Length: 182
Image (cartoon, one colour):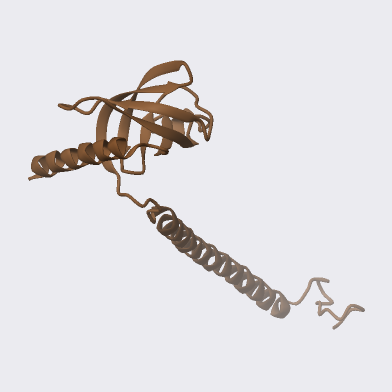
C-alpha cells in the first residue's frame, strides 16, 4: 500500500517495504564508493600533474637561470684581495673571476653601482689593481639562503695594462687548474 508521499509500507507494521530499503542502501553505498574512488584518482592525478608541472617550471627556470649571460667564462679561485671604497679599505676574498668581473666574498654592505678599487693578490705573482662597480649584492638575503655573503662586481674603466695583467693571472690559474685536474 502507498501512503500520500508515494512510499510503500506494510499495513501490519507501518514500516517501509524492504524491497525499497535494500536497493536504496545498495545505491547509496555504490554512490559513496564512487565518490571515494573519484576523490582518490582526482587527488593522485592532481599530485602527479602538480609534481610534473613544478618539475617543468623548475626545469624551465633552471634553463633560464642556467643560461650564462656573461661574455667571459668564470673560473673558480680563492684569491685574497683588498677592496677600497673611497677612503675605506677592507680585506676580502675572490671566489671566482673572469675578464669581465668577479664574485667577492665580503661581509661589508656595499651600495649597488658603487665604484671601488680592488687590489688582487694572485699567488706567486705581484698584486695588481682594477677598477670595478658593484652590480649585485646578497647582503639583504636571509643568512640561511646564502652560501657565501658577498657581491658581484664588473670591471670598468681599466687601463690596457691592468686588463692584460688580469688576463695573464686568469690564464696562469687556468693552466694550474688544468695541471691539477690531470
